[in-house]
Image (tube, rainbow, N blue to C red; front, top):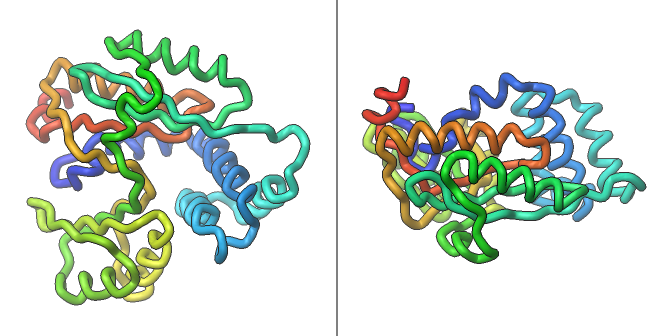
Length: 247
């Protein structure tokens, strides 16, 4: 974890999640399928474009992606998933947003509520924590040789903001619509982001001590492992020294 972007601080377990490849693929396919409902042309549908890019980054076969697009754009019978976001609080009062795609809201909310209560959290009402978050495109670059050139490429292709981290890495912030334009411009110049995703950025963070950090990490793993959960976001920030002590 040490040295990563503060905005990605609580998302560092992705490597662990990626090992569950079968479950990861099913979540990615679901995202591509739902995105395709808003248009099957990636050029005119930024969400689909980003979902395809994410699936390709995990080595998903092209035929799987194409099949998901066809299923979503044709409104195939039997695919009746809806998007729902649950809001709540975790250990230490940290805010949590849980993005789901489900065909059974009662099942999903029961599973989410159980996970939260198991680790000392609770489910909140609509709007209880969502005001703390903003949907953005995030790319984190490792230390770059020519910072000014990189910043110029990012800004010219649509980036909204750039932030330099303590370790020399750079966070590039975009709107969701401009995310792929900026990423493709960087990659075309041989600049490959270390982290690349559309995520929810918190306006304020809650620093975790060892006790709360352990519970938070366990909670987030349980939530991410639920079949209906697509993404989990939190404003919890775990200092490097706390992560090191947890191991």
